[in-house]
Length: 366
Image (cartoon, rainbow, N blue to C red; front, side):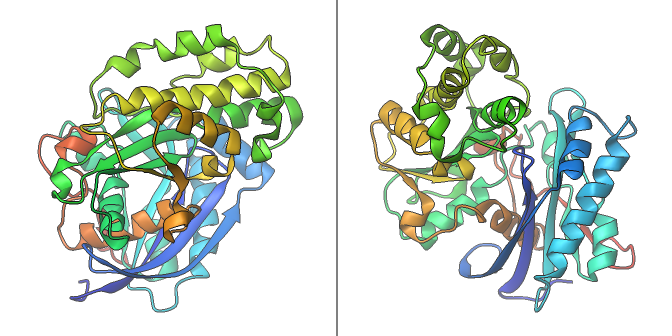
């Protein structure tokens, strides 16, 4: 049983960029944020990343999934152990391998029971399944934390949190209204196609500083076809799998390295611009988290498409590298306290729901 009042929570996130695991500690009661603790990062090795990539798009019991899950559990266990001091509860997201909310469901590799036993702490995991079971998209889940952050920074006017990970997602927030008024959805591919391109062609993990894209020219025909995709006309909430737009990689196949990078960077920005058409009101500013905020070319393209300040979250005193991990620490406390983690406006779930399974060390379920 989680103690009353605010607790020390540790969260971990391994996103669709497949680069590694982030872990971070926060102090919270599941509603307010009281402070931020230490954080750490563990990069996936080449063989680890290869094992996860080999299992992308696969479901429990299929080839390669058990091997990927073992990689995820081991990597998380090593990293989380470093930050356990004083921690009351752990939030473990796992690694998304497949996401088909209106079909087979959603699949995050990694068994929370293994980690709860290894860490000796109550652990919350399987955050998305309950939402999907109740008709939701199961994503994005960070909006609950974004709302708390909007309060933390003292925001008074509508604003947007934009996460540029492998897939882009946004949360539109009016701080003067409750979390049930939020609108959240995936905007489209962000770093995933670009990372895959430079990894395959140049052996680099990403386009550092947008240097490759800065030397290239955008292929407007490809960009126009992308922006006309039916996904952008769909009213949110809506979500994507990492590889839902994988065909855009095939379209840039005949371009030079620089032109392909520029085009894929413009694709990420165009998805955000199309997404902004669904905001209930124009935001005063957009606060950007995730690896894409370090790409000045991508950031400039997004700002040009939105017409409002587009800023890395560091400008308001937050940690853009660890915000997603912090979110799952926050969500773990909400789940343990029976508070909602998603709403109709954030995932399309039929009613506000608190997802997640709480596992106690020793195999018990709270």
